[in-house]
Amino acid sequence: MSEFHFIRPLWLLLIPFLIALAWWWRGQRTTHGGWSEFVDEHLLAVQFNYGGGQSARWLRRSAPIAAAIVIVAAAGPSWEQEKSQVMRLQQGRVFVLDISQSMNAADIKPSRLTLARLKLVDLLQASRDRQVGLVVFAAQPYVVSPLTDDALTLRETAAALTTELAPTQGADLAAAIDYAKALLQQSGLPGGELILITDSRPAKEALAVAELSATQGIPVSVLAVGTAQGAPVPARNGRAILGSDGRPIIVGLPVAELKALAKAGDGRYAELQASGVDVDVILPKLEALPQADDLTSPDRSTAQWVDRGPWLLWLVLPWVFWVFTARWF
Image 1 (cartoon, rainbow, N blue to C red):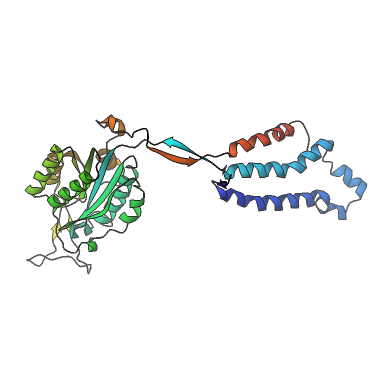
Image 2: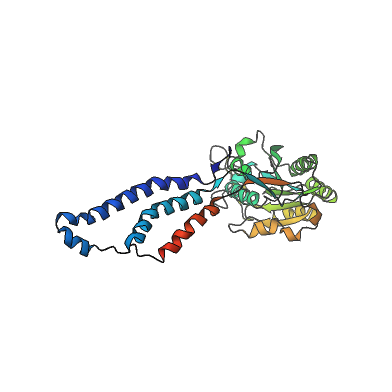
């Protein structure tokens, strides 16, 4: 009992309100709602006949106690833990986010990178069944988080990613794929996949690296960000980057090339959408995965506090039956 606590302690805040309500109700019945100042005592006994006899009076007095027991039960008293089996795939998933300057283009509002970050949060939310890692890249790749079981923690980190984090600009997809693959292999997991979130045009080297990754059992999927029409790329001062002809540089989404990259990596391809259709395409359903043996071993479990609150409701049950056998109003 040294570890006794309440799982949902905020419910206990209702107890002071319950005490105040009981005190107010007692005063109302004692003074007959203030009418005792204007009506004779023998008339009040008839006018305010609450009835029910001694049984009903005890029922009314015990009502606050029954309500207090319900509140304590809702707060979830607990003093011991039990282990439960966790269903988690022994596979990893590394997200590779493009933070090159072109991701600031606003052909999809408010910008490609803003929507890519929001979509990354959705992907992390849907990846809680496995370990996940996060890599960003521009001219060079950088690890934001190695593979971890806590996918939800990465959501806060994703919100802070900007193109200004990259010291040098560019978009080396081949280096990013190779770096993320090495990160996954170092984790010691038996399998996994890479998911690129990018708008950059892949070079031949990127196709070769993606194909090699697929042959090693690590497919490469692509979530493309942007539109084929493209938009001007803003610099850090907010003005559009100009080309040699003095006109703004328009960067469109290289759809065909990115599809070829996903095909070379034996992965899936989708274009970022406001709905969740793209997430359903990029992330396969659990039952569709080929390696069902990668589920967690029996020793993978988590401890959870046991809620003993429902047992307290047995104390209220006789009072509830009592309500149906006595008049108390």
